[in-house]
Amino acid sequence: MNNWDELQESVGFTFKDITLLQTAFTHSSYVNEHRKEHLKDNERLEFLGDAVLELTVSDYLFKKYPDMAEGQMTKMRAAIVCEPSLVEFADSVHFSKYVQLGKGEEKAGGRNRPALLADVFEAFIGALYLDNGLAKVIQFLERVVFPKIDTGVFMETVDYKTQLQEIVQRDRDVLIQYDILGESGPAHSRAFEAQVVVNGQVLGKGTGRTKKQAEQNAAEFAVRQMMRN
Amino acid sequence: MNNWDELQESVGFTFKDITLLQTAFTHSSYVNEHRKEHLKDNERLEFLGDAVLELTVSDYLFKKYPDMAEGQMTKMRAAIVCEPSLVEFADSVHFSKYVQLGKGEEKAGGRNRPALLADVFEAFIGALYLDNGLAKVIQFLERVVFPKIDTGVFMETVDYKTQLQEIVQRDRDVLIQYDILGESGPAHSRAFEAQVVVNGQVLGKGTGRTKKQAEQNAAEFAVRQMMRN
Image (cartoon, rainbow over all chains, first blue to last red):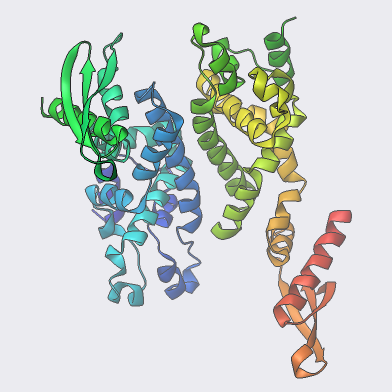
């Protein structure tokens, strides 16, 4: 089995136009060293794939978190479609192995350069979109990207009060309430204590130097408790 | 005919879920003044619509300019999906008239605020996508956005040598060549003259303080001549 067959088997799709898949894995340094073959590098596919990822991830967040504010969704999307995350996704499907690199770039360790791997991942998404349409891209993301979102790991970019709201919103008619229990200390180093009450039950307490921070810490406690269950 | 029927007739689509269309045109100031009605503002739809626009415009550029480099496509996309352009698109379909605004925002002239109109345009795209899918969005853009791209107006963000290449690329096997014809003046204010030759025919000449600038000006001359025909 050649590399391209192996790759297609690994991602679970057969490309109608195999040159699209090959182009997605072709770095400009390889094109420069093989001028006579008139190859294309993956930069245009990366441009397209980036936009495909932005939309598919936005759509997923929009539907998964029906009450999340626009600003929070924007933060989460940025945490998902960013170099370190894209590298993780690329690694999870072993993309590094299939990249076509120039010799100089190979010697310089280019194959495992984060920016290069992130570009290849986006270019692959662009190629899949052109060859198979948006529905196939979503099928791929359902295996490689969305389960990661479901673990809640990208929620860490979102504040804890919002996280708690998103968790308990699954059950309707939930009332979340924050109480300031007290404050202490001199004016220049005041400390506040807050609690969060969900449907009448105290789920967390926290302290902080502002009321807002105390509430955040109470919410964080509640979120961590709930994640553990 | 009520406003929403009029709007749907004007955009050429009937929404299955009319509340999506209404939400797209609802500013947060209106929601704040009508708390009892439990309305949603258009911010989440704007988040989604922005990503839909990025993809549909990227896809269009990718296919329309098969030889354009990634960097140039990125510049063009930024010129298309930016506030002033979105306001123009929104104006061309008279969206301002249908926006639901709070009284304070209305008095402050919010109805014609560029940022507000750009947001409404994106929110409308988000609503159309949710209600009717990507194909319907593309149908709408084929009337409102893509013809504007076809006029070449957004090409102005792209350098003239690239523009010329894109124009003549329509015919295959075209050779574009730049010659430096001469230079003059003292070292501190040198002037160069260049010409651009396409398939053996001189299409433009230009001068500049660097060779590169002289070539750009020659290309600009050629592009403007060709646009006139």
